[in-house]
Amino acid sequence: MGSLDKPLPAEPDTDVFGSNAFAPQEIALRVQAVGVKKAHLPLLSQLILSVLGGAFIGMGALCYVLIHSDAGLGFAARQLMAALSFCLGMLLVVVAGAELFTGNNLIVMARAQGAIGSGEVLRNWLIVFAGNLVGTAGLALLVWLSGHPGMNDGALARDYIRIAETKAGLPFMVALWRGILCNALVCLAIWMSYAGRSVIDKAVTIVFPIAAFVAAGFEHSIANLYYFAMALLLAPEVSSMLLGGMLRNIVAVVIGNVIGGSVLVGLVYYLIYIRKARA
Image (cartoon, rainbow, N blue to C red; front, side, top):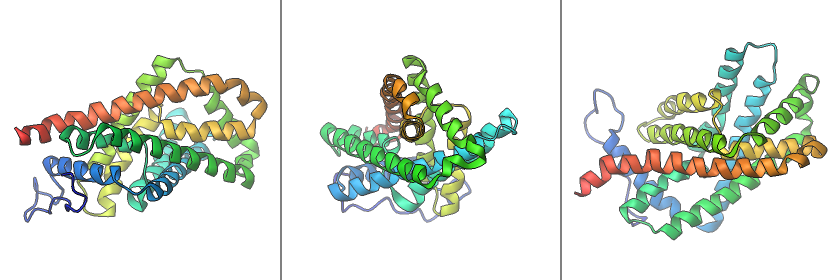
């Protein structure tokens, strides 16, 4: 499993459970193999893909605000429609190809197997998070310069600021628990995408878990970076007073995202499928 030259598990000759999806055991092997490859990506490729990942999630957040800012919609309709539009970000990450900190929490499966070391895991997470930060901030700057937040008589700009204020005001433990719930769903979406053999398969498996976490109001660290960057650009005099809350939110949500993705998904499935196979 430690070799980058080892191919992903071959597709079975027969359908699985009456469909052509990969079985959970095969998904576990594929996720583990991809984790090794991610840990060994060349630095430049890793950085560029990470910047793209941040920008892609920012695009999803942009679409979310476009709908969420419409006060004419009822609460349930607004939450659901906005959440579905956010899925664009994850579809871009998975289908177009990018590195995302929250999704890369799954590489703990490769670490648990012993295919990579703890240092390689931490290095990957730090590089990818830094690249995601650049991508979200860069997109926020471009969107701000374009005047896009001024649409609908400035409703988008006001919603960006409200979102940032709400997130910055969350107590640490509330943000942490919401981060755990968020990334459990994000990593389940990515996990299930490895069961698919086509773009449509991947899209279907991604949309529902991602829409669920967004509609439920859970916390995604990379999306929050975009919201905070936009708020700082749109209302620096207000947002500068929230810097402490923003930092507290990011720290809490990052910890929660790591627990949700690495422990509740990555390690749980490792114990179910990989450790059992080794024994």
